[in-house]
Length: 608
Image (cartoon, helix red, strand yellow):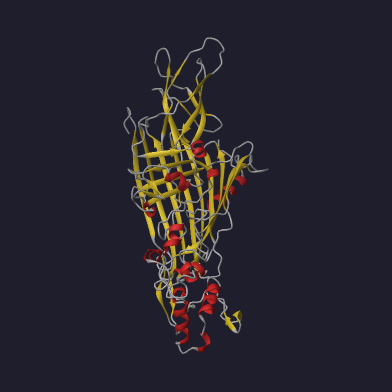
């Protein structure tokens, strides 16, 4: 008898497949032996069912059973057999790419008796794991003092900021729901995802299975939550940090904009500001604590002797011009914050006719003030995800994933692909013109980096021991790196009687310009980075998994990846005569990659 599939379900299948990432292991399995408690004889034909799912298996003649393709999480497993008391195992933990053993001894019943309720114990040793693997579940995540996936990974041995065992983040394979979340342009992982959406994080640090390609130092697999079939659930987290300095500071420590700070004191301290730090009242010790300054008397003398009568200034007037050129306020007077929210459940009105169609969506936003204001005053990123699941029938299911995000950050001038964010990065970028970097707004370029990932996977369970999966994906990452708004160079701001200036040093101006002192020169070494690249990839993958017998789990698959890399990046520098020089890469490539694999996981007597 042919099985009827409604047209609406077929339409849903087409939509979810056409909205097309690499899929890898996102499920685990249960296996074990069911025997009579008194005789030890196998109970062939006993039923093992994972409650609140469509998953289950029958026990074979040897008393053995296996259930594949179980999403990670906590479950209750029911074991029943005619003439025996039903056993319910609660709190059974399923882990990604791992086997959970449930061996049960069943008691015969002569009268109607209640089921036996057992709480499963988590194994301290994992005999089926042949690699260095860590699994972190939602309950453990809630106890950790972290706010993102990177924070979770940093608390694991041998991992720091996605660098596993000394490798770089580009040696890491990072996956979300089996989707390869990595930029095909530079292998940089996309790790931003709301903690509220995470079901489990699995980390492998060596000895990878054949199904995982292009991985060297480590493998991180994040599996997100599914919406419930009945009812809705969600969470909301808001973290707020009041405005504060981004460096160690006491009440006696001046801020960078204070007149007695490290960079500014030589220009305002009356003991040295007129005659210079070498000729003033400071002793040798004090001179070594601050930058050298020749003094405003010397600055005034140089301006009077440069054959340009328009810039002649007295020492006091020169100091007043300097005060204007360093006018940009520096204190971090705005807070940091993080928002993490998740919500899911059945899709209203159409869930039941579309195979219990359900969703889980999450949103994450992060805002962190920089050490001091630059082209942006802060670092920001936004990420939104959506997961949808549907069972077409008892043996077929669909999963759709999407992840969309964007970050607003700074771009380093000479170091392509480097985006300074941390206080040490900003402080280290003062370079040869520290006053310009401190008090301008375009020492770095602005960078906006957006990513999109869409994936659809179809799973067909032929039997409790055999499944196949077909998946399609699309990845897109778009770069936009540019300078701040152009400076208004018209001299219409009167800061001294009859002395007019422009907005200097605020606003982008690509030509060299020197302020009242050489220390605040700008133009040549600033806001150089440019990037208008677009990286895309399309991936098709098919996997076949079969538990040939109780000891052998065979998996085979093929993969095809098509990349479209439209590269347009480099740096540009303007010379005083309008000439430009720099390094500009502009090309479009279409790399293609194909792969096939087969692997056998042998589990017997504690050996894997």
